[in-house]
Image 1 (tube, helix red, strand yellow):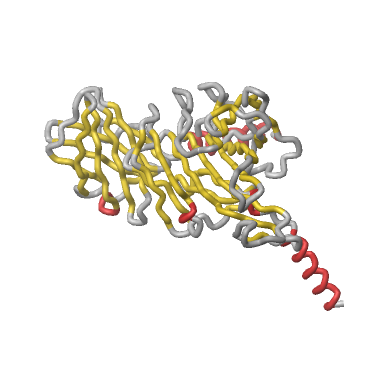
Image 2 (cartoon, rainbow over the protein chains, first blue to last red):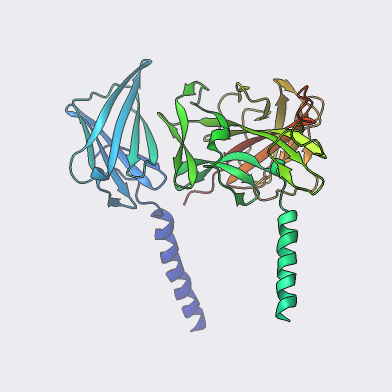
Length: 126
Length: 247
């Protein structure tokens, strides 16, 4: 009886411990088919497409409103840098319409919150 | 009874003030604060007012992983100065000229040279330097312009586990210097009993104390022809983070 109780306690602890370890800062699984990077607690998901580039923001699996930020992206490809502003596009989405991601490029997203705090996420396109 | 306690408390407070670290004991380094990289002025756990000392910071420079310059500055964000850069930085560095300091026989420090404090028992010019690696270097840390004293990893690879030895080298005016002190944990062991000393090749070996931020500090007293002081004291930090296990 005592052993059963002990086993139950261990199993309960394991259930508590595992999700805490996995979800400490949220899932790293892309939600929009893009590439993901975690900076601090903020998850950046970069989605490139023929219509431009979108960036989705979330923290601990919760979308965070893009309207609270100013942002830009800088692409470095073949030694040449190009920049574009990322504009809030509803919900947790920032967009740079018409911006073309080059193959094998480095894309840096710079995100500035209302306090002026800046964070970066760096992506390498394929 | 109350009077005695009050007197005791006053005396203890007085002793505490007198025993406070001398001005020259303070250094500068970089550390993360609320997701930002901040410039810290202090010693041990004393994280003092770095914003009011911003005018003393002569340069702040940032570098990418190839040590190419990145446009970088310091911005007062409330109570702390934080690093602002156009792009992510792999390393950031700063120089602070803390000016002339003279100590009078009563133990007081004055922000003046010997020319203005003729009875000074000690007069020195303090310089403070900081280099912070935000990622592990893939190339040797170069000597940075204006860093009269600089502490660098002797090897490109930095050991990644707390407790492992790490060889460092101290440069003074661009050359390896013997006899410099190297403290291995300026934040958590500011009174280190037997800090390492550099040998003839400028190297010393320290033990990495933290699986987190490590703030190493080189200290060197250099001679000067400046008649306003007896010598110049340099403190140069090298800081970096050893990563913790995945969460």
